[in-house]
Amino acid sequence: MRRISTLGYSVKQGMKSIVHNRMYTAASIGTMTACLFLFGILYFVVANFRYLMEEAETTVGITVFFDSGITEEEIGEIGEEITNHEDVDRLVYLSADEAWEQYKEEKLSPELAATFGNDNPLENSASFEVYLKDVEKQAEVVAYIEGLDGVRQVNDSQSFADMLSGFNRLVGYISAAIILILLGVAAFLISTTVSSGISARKEEIGIMQLIGAADAFIKGPFVVEGIVIGLVGAILPLAVLYAIYYRVIEYITESFDNVFSRMEFLDIQTVFQTLIPVSLLIGVGIGFIGSYLTVRKHLRKGLIGD
Amino acid sequence: MARYDLHKDLQEIDAPVILFDNVSKAYPTGTHAVNHISLEIRKGEFVFLVGSSGSGKSTMIKLMLRETKPSRGKVYVAGKDLGRLRRSQVSRFRRSIGVVFQDFRLLKDRTVYENVAFAQQVVETPSWVIRREVPKMLALVGLSDKHDAYPNELSGGEQQRVALARALINHPVILLADEPTGNLDPKNSFEIMNLLNEANKRGTTIVVVTHNREIVDSMQKRVIMINKGVIVRDEKGGYAHAKN
Image 1 (cartoon, rainbow over the protein chains, first blue to last red):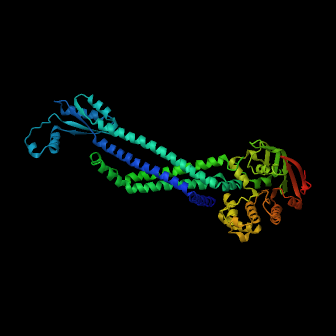
Image 2: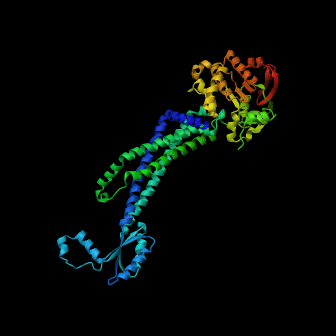
Image 3: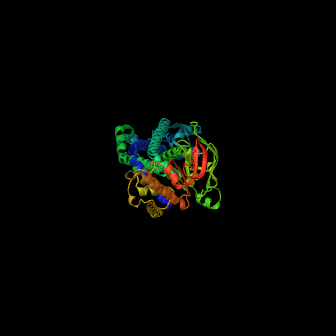
């Protein structure tokens, strides 16, 4: 009963303080909104890049060709050795006939293909398509396969894999740096807002301390204020991001048609089922920590002199 | 952590309710507000602290409230050394002390009712108890008809009665009043002193800092005169007898 009454008091006073310090509150909410909006945009980029990476890991493969005159049995042994490597996800065997059929289908017109009759110009082109668990391990796996007996040639797409993983890392670092700076600014502004609230209510806090209010009771309204700022500062950008997600993707695919037109992006539910809790946690967390530490500092310093 | 319960402690021990043991207080500015004061105030006493401005009276009130700590010596309340109280214990200790100031220190944006109720909210009294107790207390100090008024709509005497109601609402063991009649006319001053006297008769120990010679003379209570941080006289009677 007492706790409920104290909670009610804290919420009421916290809301009053928000209205009283509306300029500071608006500035804090604005900064938090900007931070979490940017966070959301960066999250879009990172999440979609991760998705593309995962896609790439299943599509960017290694092709292994064999020495001429190799037997089916020897090919089977090579296949087994490749499969045993820990970074290899799966292996697909493409016989010379299948390779020629595939080539004809993709590259040649039916008339031109017919001129070859039953000949197979790719008779030495049986191969393994090797798919990896982690695209970053491609160089390592290629070196391993090249060292196997009976392997004539290994084709890979290392430069593409390098580009993807390098870009992914760069985006990750830049995002982390920007977000940390912005969250620092947001925490500072919340602290300023709460400090201004404390100054405005200095007399009241002094009276509270003199008549025996516990620190938790004094801190309550300020912590509520910080949490509300964080909460509103998280909900606003989430709403905007939700509204613009597909437009952003549309814009990117149209603006960079040659790069992105054939790529698939994450659907909105998948993105937001992570983004919503993370943004709310960051907003409320920064609001809580910023306000709690500020009011604790002021109370420790002693508002009523010593 | 042991809870600090002054009501309980006072029932259990026979120590003075307030004890200054060779207490000195120097401020960082170099001012020596209190010098080697030793003093006992027993349960149920009514004591006036008198002296000229800057004599150290208000510092003594601050020491009793643990608003400040002594530079030397010890202040005990109900046998407890206030210097050894932990932060959480200080707030609990203050719940048993009522305080009244010359400038009333009311919350200007709250009504009379809310100002008094605030003292109970602060100590987390259930709201149904607050609804029952506050009107009774306002009746006791003669402010039933000012329930919804704001402090700036009240006279000085009325504001001090609100402050007194706020100080008494939690049934304090000790009531400390720092110049409670400093801003009041003689009629209101006597009314406030009567209310303090009534609280004293109900068992509350009262310590009043004052300059008001007429009041001290009329009450004939224990008078402690401070001069330059030192007790120069401590006896029952009027201000004149306590003259330096």
